[in-house]
Image 1 (spheres, helix red, strand yellow):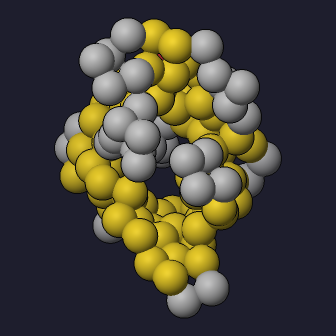
Image 2 (cartoon, one colour):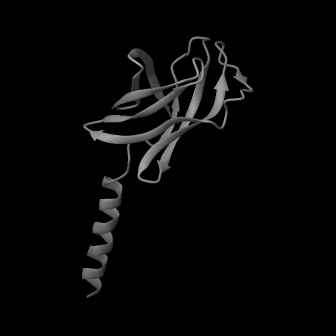
Image 3 (cartoon, one colour):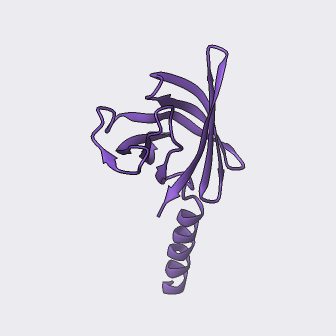
Amino acid sequence: MRKTGLLVVGMIMAAGGAMAEPLLGTWRTAPDDNGNTGLIQVAPCGQQICGTLVKSFDGAGTEIASANNGKMIISETVSAGGGAYKGKVWAPDRNKTYNSRLELSGNTLKVSGCVMGICREGGNWSRVK
């Protein structure tokens, strides 16, 4: 009985690791129209994935105070399978929310989206370790 219990616990732990969401964590954005970048903390929000701006940096890489810190950048995002995600990304530099596609490949997240027929590449974001 004890061996069976240990086997069940081991299987549950292995399944939990296999179900870990690879998009979760902290990502550095590509520079925006003003040359600024940010750190986005990506976490579950209900059944979806969301990301909040936790730090902002100027073009020289110096941390700056931003009224956008603490605001949700990624929202309503769900996995579409194969490293692809669909959802919404708010671009503070243009104050627009884009219907977005996120493509995860290793430690790089390619971000793109469209709003009212106007599409924009959000560049490649890098995972922060």
